[in-house]
Length: 124
Figure 1 (cartoon, rainbow, N blue to C red):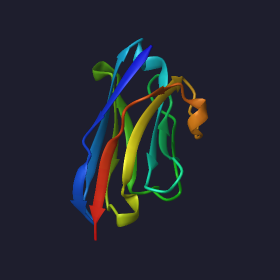
Figure 2: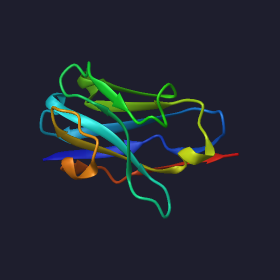
Figure 3: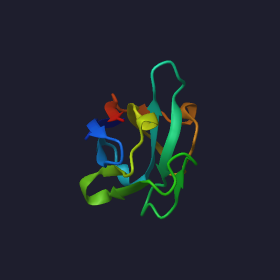
């Protein structure tokens, strides 16, 4: 089992920044790929960013966040981060981290482990 806990959400003005953290416990997290997803009210959950297991040299981003968000991992801390810059009101959502073994995926049904989510609200 892998347990995931997100933190770092909050209220920020448009143009601001936040860093989300996804702390993992349980199995050796190093070998697990992690994805960040978000869900806004009335909308489906959508992929935001993903990072491969291992050293995390392979990353992937949704077009809507490319150039603004950066995913990274610190295997010594069993933590994956999502650095979010130039935030927009349309980034407002509950952000979830999810894990699966090694390879990046971009659809939620490919991930077996999920955190509880953290709210990000961007005011205009």
